[in-house]
Length: 634
Image 1 (cartoon, rainbow, N blue to C red):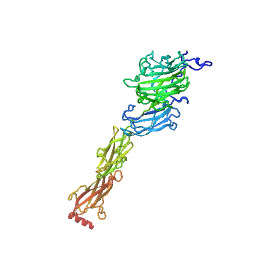
Image 2 (image 1 turned 90 degrees about the horizontal axis):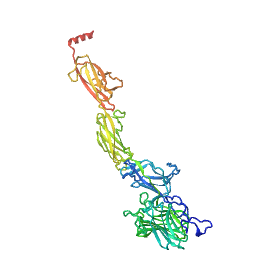
Image 3 (image 1 turned 120 degrees about the vertical axis):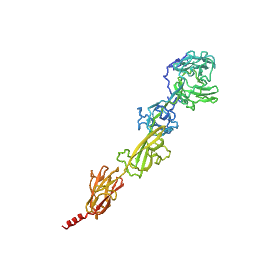
Image 4 (image 1 turned 90 degrees about the vertical axis):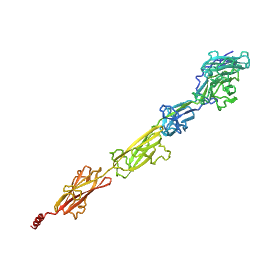
């Protein structure tokens, strides 16, 4: 009798004398089920996926926090087409249709083949529950490499050996052997595997069937004329002969979650039996998953090919080439709440040696790519105009000259200059008070100052004399951050004035009956002093005398400009004094005349002033008159 695994036929050796030996190990098992050859119909490829969350990092901590999500953000997926691990627009092709984030900021790309990818968030506007619509810049992930599948829970890695279980007594008898050393195995779900070997057919009392674990593989090993049923059970720690404990894998009443991958439930999609190989055809493999004794499911793989090492994938739901879990009791197994697992191999032909490698849960390979956007900075801008002029400084060239008591119009142009919509926008003037008259604003009427949106306010007032300064201020809220801006504007409103002082022979003589007394026929000299006591330059100066000019054709004097325009510009500056002179021959009796002066400000205002003067002309004494008469006769 030979024991061990039969490995091939030696030339000239009859079937009954073929040597059985353990095979060399077939290499490290794969971490995913993949398509190996077209004839291996039970192998499969597990589609992968990429998911994540797009958010605005308002807390500036680099991670997603509640309330930071972006709703409706466009997300794209590209292949690394040229394999250089760098995103190249125009070269890297789009790997899947673009998607948009949900209300909680989540996105996903599913059913992806193994390969390298980039996740791209293009520049756009998206919505945040706190910040509203915000402008996003392009964000590109690093290269993401996906395999065909990802490991979930390991049922048995078969890297620790346990004792041989042999049955060779009578047909149908079974022996459950508790592993002798070590008592527990770190690579085994529940810490212990239990072997049962059951002989089904044999032709000699020396025939038997055995099951054992060695070198990273689980072996079934019947003698030449024997067939058997081999069962390995994972139901936690127990003693030999205890049978199946349907809830032995429970911890504090909670079963094993076979759907979990990386601690996330619902990711694992099925059980993969790695490196299954039998040297005779038509082996039958059964996998049973128990939630408890009243609820379990079973998958059956029949007609396993001969001498082919393959991976066999059994999906939790649906079918893989006809292989699927079916309910055997109750509502079937709840794969997220498992109490026990059994693997059964049944030989249908004599001397059907076989081996099985890793049993584990397989899910799609996946990558979580969260897209962090820097928190936008809110900002607001206000520009204040006076009658359409900026006039930020009182010395600026565009400061308007206005006329007192006329109307002035201020315009306040408010712009969202930041990256967040602004609410609670308030405009005030430090002199004029609240500003609420909006003449243009957002067309959607939502009372939110959106990014790059412009609102225009106006306010009117009455011009006051002098240099006038007022300041427009705007405040608003960008999210929870208050923003503010201010802008000054100015105008000048001159108080033009002109003054004339008239003197007669050097005397002011404003009142009637005052002034110098002269003799009839003597020369009277009038002096006109014109000054600018106001605050603006005057032009177009006109001096008249009501008893002189403009009646020059009948009168004997006219004021004549004698000097004072120091810069010769014909404008009466604030520092200048213009002097005019006129003379006439005194006529008998009191004499009154009034000087009037007019000028014009730069804004067209007319200013005037007047000043009277008086003198009295007396008749000459008689002696003086006779002498004059005689003198006139000579």
